[in-house]
Structures are given as C-alpha cells and as structure tokens.
Length: 370
Image 1: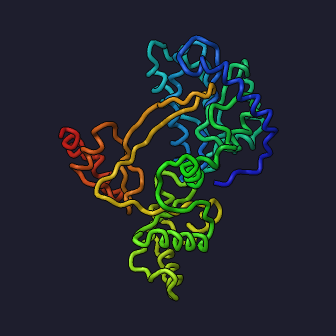
Image 2: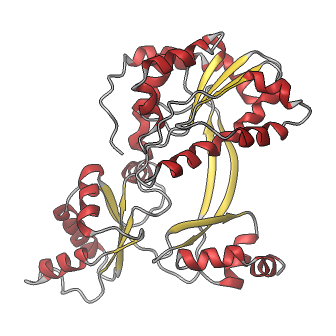
Image 3: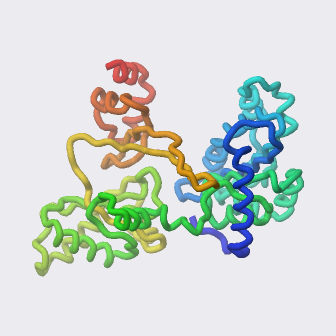
C-alpha cells in the first residue's frame, strides 16, 4: 500500500529519540513498578485488507497488550480506527491477574479517529494533528513513554517524531533488507543456502531473461515461483510451469515462455495477470526455482533485537501450508503436532478443505493422538 508523502524530519532527531529506549528497556522487558506510558498504534500497511471491518479486527489483535496494565504505574494508550466495544475491553481487563479491573481502567485510554476506511491507522492519525495533540496530552512524561506499532514504515516513524517518543521497532530505513529481494541479497553475502533465482525484478522482460539464465544454469528445472517483494503468507506468489519448453536459444523459445508467463498460477484467488504484473513493476520481486519433494517443513522463528543490541529467540513453530500450490499459510502447530497432522490428514490444498478440517475436532484429536 503506497504511503502518503509525509516529510519525515531529520534522521538525527529520530536517532536521538530511539536512544531513549536504552534506559527504558528495563521497564519494557520485565513487569515492574516503574512509571511508563505505552502508546499502541497497531497500524497495518498491507494490500490484503480490503474492508474497514477487517482492518478493525486486525487492529484489535494487539489487545493482549492490555495485560501490561497489571503493572500498577503503567498507562496504556490504545488507538484504533474505530471505537472498541466496551464489552471487549471489559473481557481483557477481567483477565488481569491480581488486579481489580476498576483499578486498571483509569490507566487505559482509547482515542480513535472514528474512521472506518481501509487507510492505515497511522495515516489517519497524521492527517489529524489535533488528535495527535490529544494523545500527546495523555503522556505525562515523554521520557518514560514509547510507541508500539504493528509494522514500521515512514508513517510510524513520522508519528513517533510528532509524539516526541521513541518507537519500539526497526527503523524503516532497513525495510529493503526485509523484502524477498533483500533476503536473497543477505543470503548471498552470508553464504546461506537458498534456491537458484534472481532478485529485484520489475518487468516481464526481466522475468523472462531471469528464467532463461536459470534454464541455462540448470536445464532440468521444471517450475519456478515469482514472489512479490512484500507478499505475506505466500499470497504474493505465482507458479510458472516450464516443462516441455523449447530448447534454449530456439526460435520459438521466447513466444512459448511468454505464454507460460501469462498462464502462471496465482496463490491468491481473484488475481489477474495484468494486476500482478502492475504490482511487480511497482514493488519488484524475485524468481526462484520451486523446490519439490515428498515431505516438507515450513518452520517459523521469531526473534527480536533489543535496544541494547542483543538478539533474543522468542519462539518457534511449524506452519501448515495450503492453497493451490501449497504455499499459503493456513495455521500453525508446535513440536510434533504438525508432522502428525500432515501424516494423518495429508496436505491442505484449498481454504474450504482447511476450514472443514479445522472445524472437525475428531480429525485433529485423532491426528495428535498418534
């Protein structure tokens, strides 16, 4: 989703703000009795959200952070596009261990722009200077406050600057390193094994030339995947079948290859060739050999880099994949559960099949009992 043209102030000013996270880290890392204000802005900047109700649901996923109010001197400002139902707030406050909800409620503030559009929440705030001033007024001490975003773009960076508080997240200047192309570049620099392919592709011509080079390096290659740089959950992927193509350099190779490109299979329903190529031109992407085999694992690892520079492992799990070519995220499992489910139930190939299995508790119970 393109970002509006907000002019971000100097990098030096943002860097100075971020240094405030170092003394704050003790308060952020562990439960304590230190005074602090947490400003939560769960703004989403992805194309997958097409309705305001879906946007609101995603924004409310961070409500578990209300549990931080078990700290007696913590204040929490939770911003959403539209007002959260009081019953939902009551539910989360009732979960606070050892805290009377009525004692925590005065330390919780729920400002909202009351805007149900699909624009990112951060954009809505930046377009409303008076609302930003109201949020600033709820922060007793900016030196004891920090911003918690969902993802970090130039909009969240600008919001942190306007609020005058550091942002608990990576500087968006590092965003290119987190794209598909950026990851391939890092893998190459660090000698991490990765599939044959090319990165930073932005046109049909570049994709076709990349496929030709891949066929030259590995004539036996049968399928390749195009992945949009910013695709999530496999939904930016498309499969191209190369079987039966004319030999390299033959007169009809280019025409046949162009036909295969136009016939590529999209992981997300409703995508057209033209719309996909427009996104590729806008954001670029990668092309890789599709790795085939009999059994697959899709591990997911969550780490964080603290303000002190330490890298911490937070969690690991296995992703269960589905979709037309088995690349879309469906659900997750921990430990032995995922392999047991796959052995018992087989691969999930479409959303209807996934929903049926998820709703059939006997299938799940049977799978994990073996």
